[in-house]
Image (tube, rainbow over all chains, first blue to last red; front, side, top):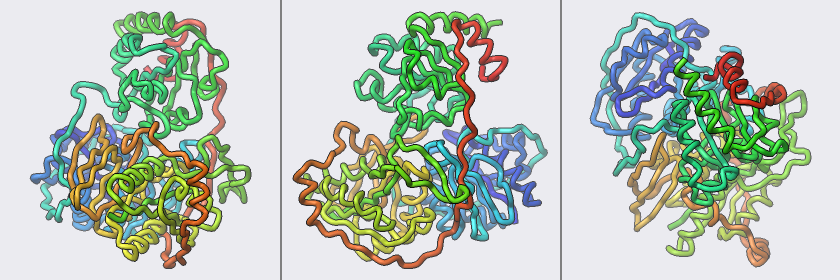
Length: 317
Length: 246
């Protein structure tokens, strides 16, 4: 029985999470003593996946212009059956989280989402999952013979592991699609919070929307996405799409820089999956310092411009 | 239109998370339980359909008697009636199966849920429920309008939004944006009084078996103290050489 990995793409380009799940799938296949097969749907050059250990790629090319839950679920099910897969691995992008439960039901597979590490055992099959807004983990046994694993973003990570691979076409039949796409609105050319390695976030400490220039400049220097706290989006200083925290967008970046954010529990619940957290705040009692790795107690209006200048010099060096 | 809103009964966000019985159980001692914050957005949108379009709103939870105060709170916010499926919600699949029975028996047109629960954060149940019922499914919904059986929705995607159309019956997992936070309802005294008289029926579980089981819980490794620096040079140095984050 093989391991099937769904490598998701957007506008023909693989998502960062695609490389993470292929890396993960390769290791799980080794643990199970089997091979890994990556599935792509209307992606670009599939050979990119060879760099992460995919010896075999099956490509679906069809008329689906964008993601469709029923359509993608049907393709993943058919591919897993054609490849004799008993383990299906899916990322935690918005699409992955939408399609994985449908795949699990159609394959009668047990499904574990938010998985942060390789299985601690394959018989019984036990995976570690994050829960309670990153305040705990649960070790879950999947008791069915087939299984779907949803890998949490930026947890196992992408690991280069070049193999010589091959790609073949796969024809899947599509069901009634039901939901149809009318239009897609995406900010072009901006780093998204979901994909960003670095997120620069600011709060009410910045006093007003007119002061966001330095946040955007810092983000630009770092190639980062910009984000904000809930009060800032509630006040209309920044768009809702930038609100991170519980009920806003979750952040699981390598580096999270919080400027003038006190660190309410609801905010921390949404961002504490980030690996390294830096806090800049003039209040030494701000609760965020307790959750941070590095901190500067100081006035953001002095610290941030200095940080921008020094980072520019650092990047050029 | 008959709307069913799925309600999870979850620890308040400020709760301390602890485990008992050799880390095999979540410690509910001293924990305040609330309506799952993600479900509140969907419930509030359901109330809008009730008030503007004459929809009926039923709320449902899969859980023991301890979840009834949470269902009563949803009734106080304005739902018409409540159903509790008497089963221990040990995994997402079991919950989805039990909910599918409720939907089939009740003939609901629109099933609303939150996109995840604030306890296990699984994002599993709404999609599984849709798949079991073979209904259309929209996840991460940030806007929904219904006209007759035609539904227009907005869903969040990585880096933006997508507008989609579908038809009833369907399952929708909502989040902030389906209504704004400022529009969330808090039960008032009249609502609380009325909720006491509203029907809350208990349905016995259909006896589905789960497909996963939690073996043990763990807490994250304790975090070291924050390193405070007083200048940006030191910060850049630490981020580069120690944290390897830049």
